[in-house]
Length: 537
Image (cartoon, rainbow, N blue to C red; front, side, top):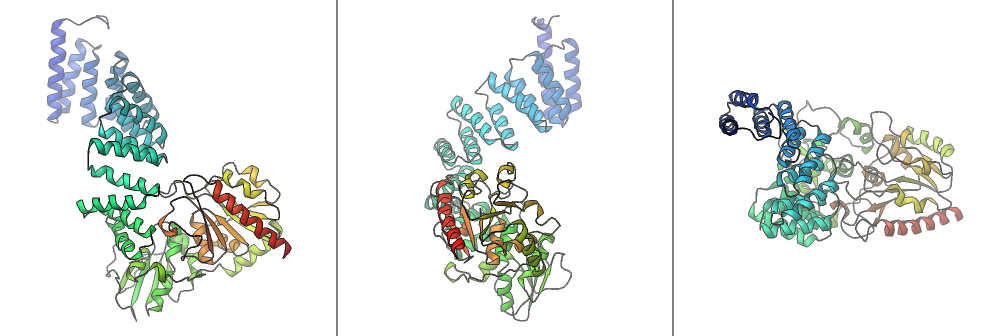
């Protein structure tokens, strides 16, 4: 029998009956019996792609991913114009983490049938998972054109556009999805986040408030609303809602036997304060440990091992520890819950700066090294890239090329403090005669920021994006200029050249989302003025 010949009627009936029975048995969980039926039918005609597809589905539901792949590959080989075969193959390849092969199979399914919803969905999801949101957006855009009434497709397009930093396109896609499927709670939250990213804070707050009224227990929505409140400077409502972070999926508060401190009298009591979130958050909020000590408490500050040495410079009477506590405490409290329980208001935020000091021995050592490595009357530290793995990183770090206009200013010795991320393509900049690259010489041991802190004390100015080193500079009281994206993280607020969190910091803000030219131009002018004063003074 040739592969392109129609099978006799009795064979057709056998294939149809086998497919139906195998499917029935698979639904009952009798996978081995279902596979036996498929194999017997294939003995009669091994060229029947539908039987290979059926066998692949049976194996897939039985958890035999590799076997399913082999069956679907055979089906796709026999019927290369069958989009369903390629879609099934792509799905199982993706489950097996064979992502590039999965993308190729799903692209083939999509090429054969641009309206194939499952192929489009799975291809887009796989591209998103692989960190390729722009390609995912193109896939979903094609699917939306073929299925314009598919609300889910428009929602997926919104997610892909948001992930690829195209909030206007994301907003339009989400709005279209909500037109087709009004009040879809799964889309209201991401649309509100996009509105925030576009600076439409009131619209974002209204949308999140409606979502929360509809679902008061939704901690993710409550947390997003809290961030908006904090961005506007409403500390009372903002920090109250910020507690919802612990009720989000996978975000349980550390379990301690002592009660959570919520404002009780601390005089003569022992309290464990523990860090959370990123290094920058811990540096920003560790200031409140001293406030708790002033209330008469004996404080132990529990931090990650990498921060223990740095935080010895807080000057606490109590201990800084990096080990799980074994002693008894009266209370515990996460660092970022302290503003709520202290009743902190933006207007009353104490400029407790500097509240962190660098190690004297390291300061002396780096002072000597910098005299040789980076001579000059005006030394400027430079940091431009945060951790790209951070959820907050998108759009907040300028590329090094955006900072090139400041590097040609005369009279300035630039000291590069950038570590780990953002160092690709650095050779041309580091080779400039007035640039000293310290990145790979800093904090080479297990302790974070200890060398960086010492170096910062020897610089006339630090220029940074919104990163952990920016908080370090502020905590040290080092003069610092911070470049911020159009809608920054809530701690920097929406307007103003300064911040009550760090009196030594001056802020240079994007006026147009994604455009670093204006803030860098302003920063360049201010730098030129400072350099001229330094050279003449």
